[in-house]
Image (cartoon, rainbow, N blue to C red; front, side, top):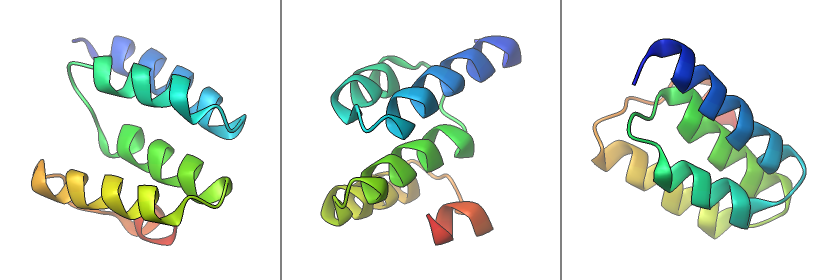
Length: 77
C-alpha cells in the first residue's frame, strides 16, 4: 500500500472515530493492509472519546503485539 493510500485510509478511520461510529471505523481498520501509528491512535482515541476504555486498552495491546511502538500521542489518547 502506498503512503498516499495509507493516509487516505487513516483519514477515513479517523473521521468515523471522531463521529463515534466505531463499528465503521473498526471495519475499515481491520480492512487496512498496512497500519501506521496514526491508524492505531485513531482507533484508541475513538474508543476513549465514547467512553469505551476497555476497547481502547484492547487496541493498545494489539498495537504492541503487532510490534508498533507507542508514541506520545498514542499514550495520551
